[in-house]
Length: 163
Image 1: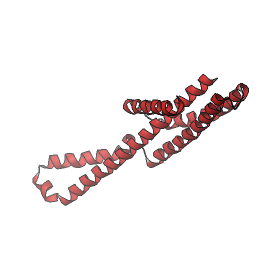
Image 2: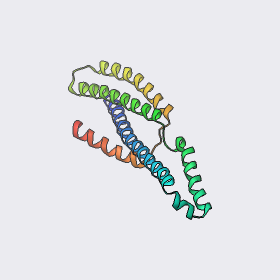
Image 3: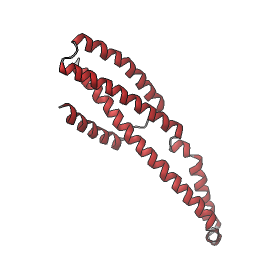
Image 4: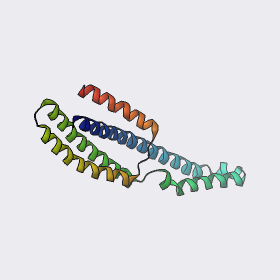
């Protein structure tokens, strides 16, 4: 049973770390995107004399490019609502992890019986299934570099606090 708890605890911590990195990345993308649009839009308005000296094809191409970026924004960048849901999901994973970690510590220290460990673990797994369902509904993109960083952070945490 302890192996199951350890695996679930490791998986949950990994997802928590991944979501933290994912949220940071999405916030940075939104920030840089907003700056890019602002600079391009303001640059377009304030540099009209420059635009008038360029061939019309280039000016139209740049304006068309900006319009295309604005139209595809929701496909490329998650909405604030989606990011808020990911934040909520991360909070659920943190709570779930804390309960698993407590169960692990109680089991390891012998404060509860093997039967109590099993009952508590499967009670927690029901909550974990609901959290995984919420995770699946959000369709969070799996980014290899973030997954690798999350794996390192997870290993470091578990080594520091549980070895």
